[in-house]
Amino acid sequence: MNENEFRDRLRGALGEPPPLSSPVLMPSRAGLARAYPRGMAVLAFVLALLLVIVLVATRVAMHPQGTNLPAAKPSPVAQAAPDSFPCALPVVAVSEAENPGQNPAMAVSMGFVNIPAGGFQVDPSAAVGDLPTGGAGYAGFYSAELKRWLPASVRTMSPDGRAYAYVGLLPPGANYSNFTSSELHIVDVAKRADRTVWTYKAGIEALGWDSSGILASTVPAQGGTRLLWRIDPASGGVTQAPGNADPNSLALTVLPRSGNYSYLGTDAQGRSVFRLGSRDPGTKYSVVMVQSGQVTTLYSGAAGDSTDFDPEGFYSDAHGLWFGNADGALAWLWSQSSGHLQSFKVSGLPPAPSGYTYSSVSFGPAGECVPGTFTGVAATGLPPATSPTPSPSPPQVDWSALTAKPVDLQPLASGAPCPVSPKVDLAVKGQSGKWPNYGFGQGPAYVSGQFMWYSGGPQAILILVDPKYTGPVLVRSRRLDGTGLLAFSGQGSTSLPDAGAMGLAQTSSPPYWGTWIGSVTPSAPGCYGIQLDGTSFSSAAVISVSKGPPPPG
Image 1 (cartoon, rainbow, N blue to C red):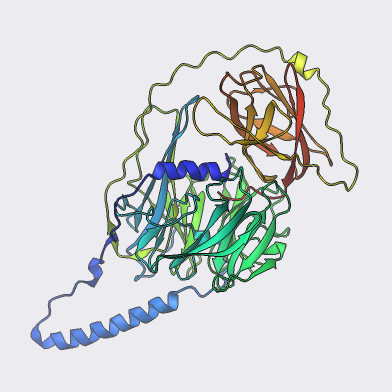
Image 2 (image 1 turned 60 degrees about the vertical axis):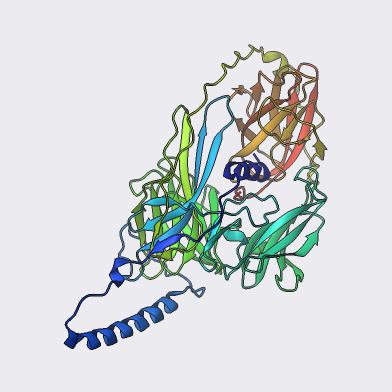
């Protein structure tokens, strides 16, 4: 599934929110006054006044100014500064559930985790539908400066927390399958002002916003070279940025031997956080922060160890770096002052729904931890699963007739460019759900799901089959500019002895298209051919796989 489809589903899951009102943050009991005899009242007042002045000065001094965090081996237990807690950490919680053969269910909850107690409560006043989004479908970001939720992400927020950027596709009403150009907008929330700062004949993606301006990438609608740009949000001035400005990239000196890493995000101070190593149980991994070439190790351990540090997104504020956990069990704080990693057990997240084979709930930080304690409402889970309609048994296929067909994917001459297949517009109608209306290849079977492909991990891939063909489809691949293959996997597929080969026994059912979705993992970056064989056709699609992990969605 590509990012645009995910955003559409996310937007559908959110629905129209209720009218906005500011969240209720109750002050800490530590600030309640004590009763003193009359003779001590004046002295107590003077001491209290001096204490307030000291606390305010301390909090201002703690405000991050872009300094490097000290490199230190973290401990799973650390003492926070006395004046840091309690605070309410804004988070976006995502609940997902799925049954084989059914569309997945998803719901999004915006609220706060009270730190250090760890209780999550939904913010009933969380509303983002009154502000423009351009159809991006971002779940939400809480601006402490504006005391409200915004339809933005960490990457699209201004450094002062009062404006956000979004991308609109042109012509109006276009989607990522048929757009011709795009425009970058900035919304000043307090003024309710939406202005266009840049229009470009390619797809724009906002990667970050800091004191140097907005960093964005562009990719042509039909595929091609990815470029980086710096946009001045005040004047709209645009300059091309060097390739190493991409926060997703990781220096070769930092890359793990396996080459497997994931990008967790970049904050307004230009600090990027990466996970080095896979999530496979027992695999050694590290979580590091990189700023101006300096690497700070936040944690080193093994996947699935007792610490259970499995970070999901991050946000930085005066406390340090906040992380969610992939299983939703913990919130984490890496302290700027102590260099320690501290965990907070989280409770009150949406409960698991009944009747599903698979369900999960996770959350990510969505703003700075606000002083005080948040009082909201309890989270509700997804509704129980509906009774599935029994699926017909897949047909039995003798794959030998298709595997006997030769693989007609010719290697490229040394130095030759990758002949990437052009996008084909399709009128896809599946039996259920929404599906991409584009593909690559000659048909009647097409490769779909992504415009850009990456070598650093699995990513979604779709095989769309025109209803004019109803038979099985054999999928094989070869790297055309070197050694490598694509590994396919997914429900409803058959692994075959030929390396990188996969069979789809059940495809289209007229008048509906065949819509298989699974994952593909390239063995290396390069140029790949994907051959699709049926009983009455053979076709191919060529894709280019870039180095690195798929960018976050």
